Image 1 (cartoon, rainbow, N blue to C red):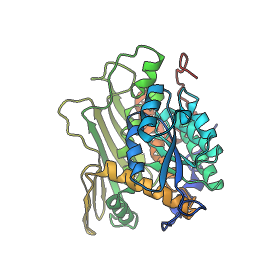
Image 2: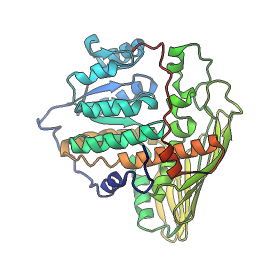
Image 3: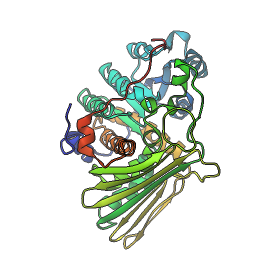
Image 4: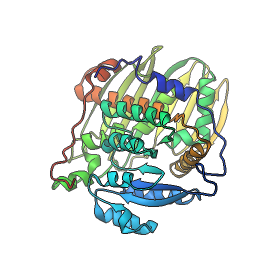
Amino acid sequence: MTVSRRKFLSASVAAAATAVIVNPRSVVGAQANSKLEIGLIGCGGRGDWITDVFKQNPNYQWVAVADYFENRTKAVGSKLGIGEDRQYSTLSGYKRLLDSKLDAVVIQTPPCFHPEQAADSVDAGKHVFLSKPIAVDVPGCVSIAQSGQKATEKKLVYVVDFQTRANRFFREAMKRVHAGDLGELVSLYAFYPWGAGGHDTVLTGPESYLLNWYQSMELSGCCIVEQDIHALDVATWVVNQDPISATGLGGRKIRKNGDIYDHYNVTYTFPGAVTLQFASVKFVPGVRNEIICRAWGTKGTLETDYFGDVCIRGANPYEGGNCSDNYWSGTVTNVKEFVEAIAAENFSNPTVAPSVRSNLTSILGRDATRQGKLLTWDEMMQANVKLEMKLDGLKQ
């Protein structure tokens, strides 16, 4: 499959650009005073956590759960008061969940599974609330773009849960940037140091491989895709264009197990001779945890921090505010806007296209670094490399 940089996602990006802000309505779907019945696919740490966010909203009711590991399914199902007949396990358990009666699914599985699970959910007529990253490779990103477009055609809502894109300070700052308050973009810098960066565990078999999915590139996409996408998503939000190329250095100096890197230093080039310098390091003791993006223009500077302040300094200042609660509050907003979009029958699904772009940008940096050469977007898209999971020995 050959996809050019200029043609890919043109329709979905245009749709996102013309999306309107919807006003919430007091009903869900066609029936007044009804609750949206939702199922959870993925009952690990993030999946368990996000159930509490949805429970804060009176418009939702959990009715089913699925996970490969039966003990996780039982734990979360019991917590939510879901009967054993609506608790599904094994790799194909999510398909039985999709066959059951519910309105929407919340997908919180390892990112390698997102494209197939999201596509199957849309085919089953379910609204989709999907965690980041959306995929680990180019075919997966293409699949997400296609299922997002199909959701719009089938009048389904499809949301990708980036917390920064739901934050009011980030939204206002980006609105001003795109209105020209920074002037002409000069360059950007993004930085994601993290003291933990996932477990470093000796794998003992197929289930250990799946349980410690973050350590494997084909399951997680590597740290630049699974984690660093938060910083790169902000950068691509600023530029609002596909990168032309990337080149980078990286490797493993701390991690002992798995095959993902623990540091990256990548230079991206965008149209207009705009460059992005990106740096990531994981597992370093004593590091200050940050998710930073800075953008410099001819009229000012944008400063953003996932856990800190967002502001614009220069000719057109914006005081902004603090985002220290972003992990929780951003998800709360996305959960709220998910049900509002369903109620208002707004199926424009504007979060899909930018999420695909930032995911592909992360993959471009990863592949350029691992291949040890300057890699263009067009070369990456044309190569269309698929990462193969090792699922032999797992319960199907």
